[in-house]
Image (tube, rainbow, N blue to C red; front, top):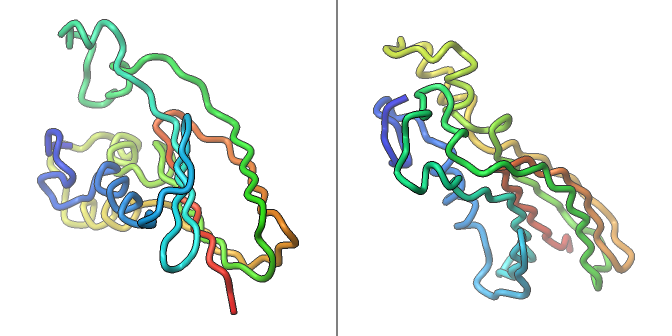
Length: 171
């Protein structure tokens, strides 16, 4: 799955890092809050909540040892970390809203993980490339909700996972 540290591989397949920047681009211009594993912004079209479960490189990799790194297992270079359960509550929201959620993690949207799942094919056919292009990218869900003062959301965020939630008021 060549492409080194770029955003797109040699076959034009967008990597998870490409989609992470895509989701960052959806954040609003006004920072409302930030903390461990979240950022909340406000833009012209409502609120944006970015949740993430970041894992740092492990000490062995940081010391320069790459002997355990394999083309089909890029996760051994990261420190062990668990899935995070996140309870989100935003108060002061009344009325009808459109909630759009984008999830990106090793199981949802990662072209690299899909490529490994397919058998880590070195030289892909055009059909295989098209398949990966069509099956990578964030999982998107959309729902309309009526809120009476508060928006609540529970999510289990796996390691290397991000979720962007857009909250737009309907008029």
